Image (tube, rainbow, N blue to C red):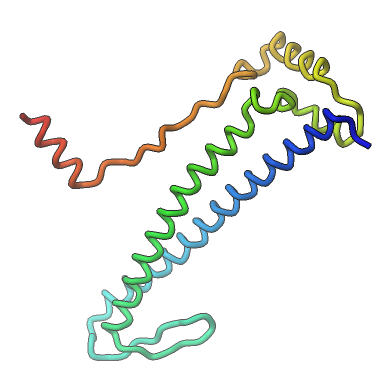
Length: 177
């Protein structure tokens, strides 16, 4: 049977691990979609090089090739590119929120057990943890100067988005007077 402090540490570690797993899954999905987007870009470039618009082209769907008309193929790939761009942008926005939630979960005030990575080793070895022990570990690190940011909250972003072309032009007009 685990002590209440050890159970709290275990709950905290499970929560952080789940949030980190979500972040990693989203990153992996973005990489996969970006790979597909690059393959589509290669296909569009090959279609642009091919000047014979009247001929059918061979398109790969999964593990089979299908002969399709050139204009329809180009239109289909362009629609897929637009869909992939939107999906990647949506995932990136969600990723920012998930990363911020992960940082919030790791804050010292919410989970004092985060002050020492040794608490995980103590949990694995089923040694009893105490608040005094965690504080002593934190003080020892401060005395060593091993982590000057220990005990301070992570810097957070403001979830800002870059200006689009229209906004940039309007800003330039305003600045010119």
